[in-house]
Image 1: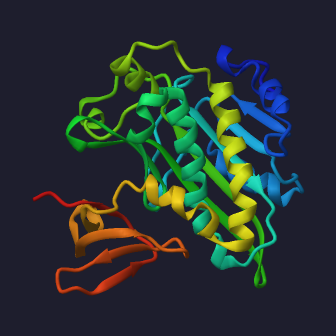
Image 2 (image 1 turned 120 degrees about the vertical axis):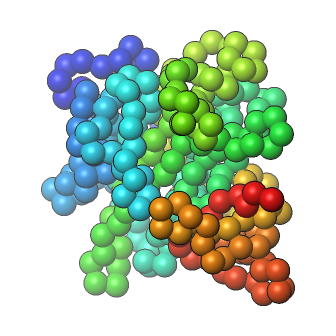
Image 3 (image 1 turned 90 degrees about the horizontal axis):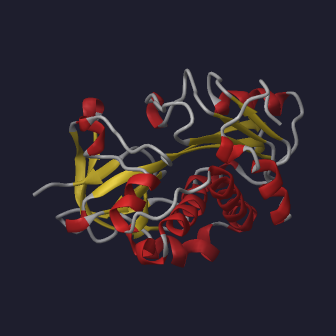
Length: 286
């Protein structure tokens, strides 16, 4: 449904496309022209009894955010901004890996939208970004994930998975264009393929998330670990932690993959293997 009776043309069929897939995620679907934050909407809905699989989507967010409180800016109608409510019976330690599962679902949907030849260029950057690798190996962000949860004692009451995907934008500010991209930009660069409908993209992401998230919540990352390793943006690269203000932090070394608990493995120059549980890592320039 659409809260204000409006909706972009490529989202008009979203509920129909999702229903045709036969999954449990995506119903009910609430689409708003504008909201503060879809994650906040989902948390409010969860507290009011909304069911597992409910989705809140907005064309524009006044207070959209990424990790560490960063603002997520998006022009109305250009991108796909939504949050999925998950009611999972799992221990709190299984919540952080859900970011990686969501990243894989988004990665697969974006790669599908860009065509078979781009599959190897779409990768997951620990812990919650989806990137596109361009000529020369440069990575540019195409999507991000923000997972938040509520606990009831030692149990997870609910998890909300916020996802933002750059879809239709073709003109990015100069400072952003160096580090970000969109499906439209990548498709134009490859073969000027037709525009991607956001309804299909949304359904693809929800399908991928539904396929894997229950498995990971109950059994850990083992069953998706091979795929995660294959599409790991940092594996084998020199990396460094990002400190306050974007400065390089104290940890630097070579990324050696992601372990079964969802931690990034970094080998220091002295040979020490560090298991990174949180924070941000970036490619280290020579």
